[in-house]
Length: 324
Image 1: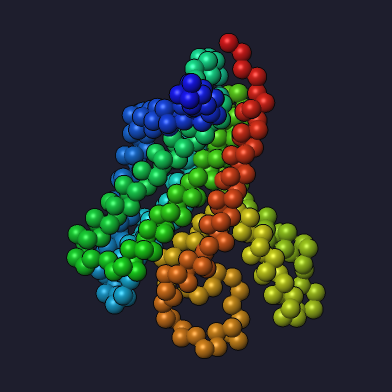
Image 2: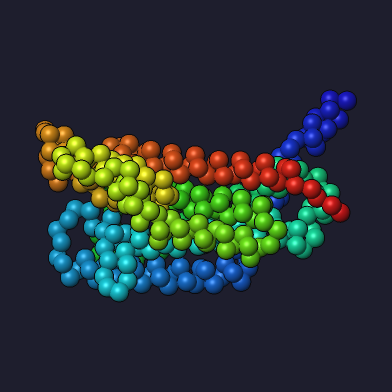
């Protein structure tokens, strides 16, 4: 009798079938033609930016003690820095993984077959997200190892423990950044019935934050806090408002997190007045713990927004009618 009760309790769990959905989604992503095209594009670009960074480091003869961190930030025309390249490409890869996660099942008329199995809606939606999220984390980790291998061959010096910890935290921040765009794409995939509409809506939001948000922030600051008398307080108020509004964008959060982690000499990501530097040694690197505290609000913001977007997807999907 006890075994029957335990078996019924397991069958009644809302997370029944979660591991099966995650495994199926990861297998589909890693073996799809879409992922192979993205992998080739990412690997070629990562190898190119890594090689360009090594050439830049070698040509400048820099005696910086954080040479390995410069692999992620050094740029040489026409290629951008590796961190900037990830800030541009990670949203597109994340959206490409999930824009048809839910509506694709409806369009293929397979959603009723999946729900008829011992798989709850909770497990299906969470499994779709985690399968794509783990796939993205696996791809980004492979690229991270590729950059490290290029650095070991090109620089010839192993990274220090501080550089290793900072680069690992940078990888975590990049995965969290991708998680936001993945949750956004999943939300649109749940709301819109057509996959093309969900993809266009996700890319439109990405373009809005990438190309237009900073311009709108500048216009809003000039409108609400215009300079009337030229006092220092007016310029400080403008700068604070502009910084606050710009941090609504996930691109800004990721960019500032990258700067705080990969540049140990950065002591503040906001306004820093001269009297606040009293007692500080200019140019001295911060410990890893202090840099983590510096970017902790950014990581917390990205994770919180991701959870909120997934919660909206959950509500919409639970209320959606599924017909056989």
